[in-house]
Length: 393
Image 1: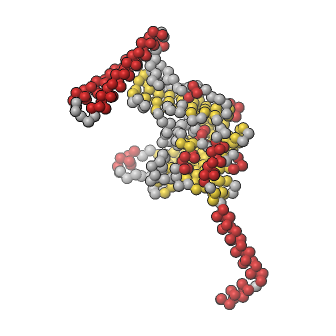
Image 2: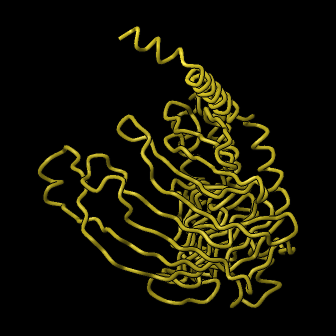
Image 3: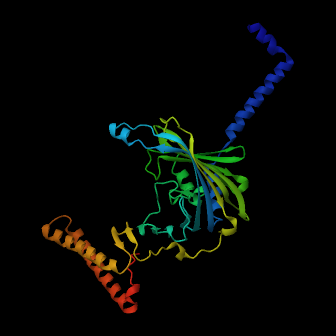
């Protein structure tokens, strides 16, 4: 056998073929080694492209198609504490959704114009972030919510997803660049696209640590993402949750943005018989005739004033109130009650370690009461009583 192999290799033509094959293998290995690129350089090009977008005011239309729906099984859940894989059945439901979305700097506002059930006017359902306060309003329920963070645990967070999710940020206000830098990420060049992979980091103390993201940037289209893949750490491995595919267009000289996108969601439970199957897709399209880019947007757009009668949960001040004249007495009484509690605590523990803290809190509440009383007095002098409304800002 060895003599036959020696005779076969001794042929000049075959020796040349072997040498050429070895060179090709060496070249292939060299090319594979060269596919890795500097991560910061790739991110820098991507962020430079994002910097050319100052603002947008768009109308985003979505077509939601559901292929599988979850089957509720409460009886099974009550009989055992062991988590059972979810069961699904075939579905064929289609909805159309419409949002008006605005962004300027770090501020954004989403107005839902068409839900799964009906069309509604602008201002009926609002989510707005002005850089320091998140305001959420629903005319249906006459409810509002105020928070000091735009961060949300939900990737989508609304019926029609935020436009910025397609290329800039997720979870409310976390940029893709930050998500990538927070993780053990790498970049490589694959078939003309720059692939940046940021796997889940469940052991790191970072926002959204169980999630990973992979961006496929297009250097010929402003380094914007052609595709974004999301994964979640589950059962000791990264499981694909959804995939965003963008059709990029040059909306301004040098500014490329998604004008059409598809988001596909997958079953995440490895124990499910439908694992990795798609269960939902969203077809998104920007209405070019009603959309504008890099036009100034007044800052007042991002400040929400709740209508009279709205029940507001203020998570910043930890109070709940109804907007309008009828809420003034309620808020004042609540603050007075908190002041009395502080005073009683001082009496019970005059030598306690928390004495100074309670004293400061009691004085702060008294000052706040005085300020509100002065505000109400001025309101009564300067405005008719029917227009008085207490809106905490």
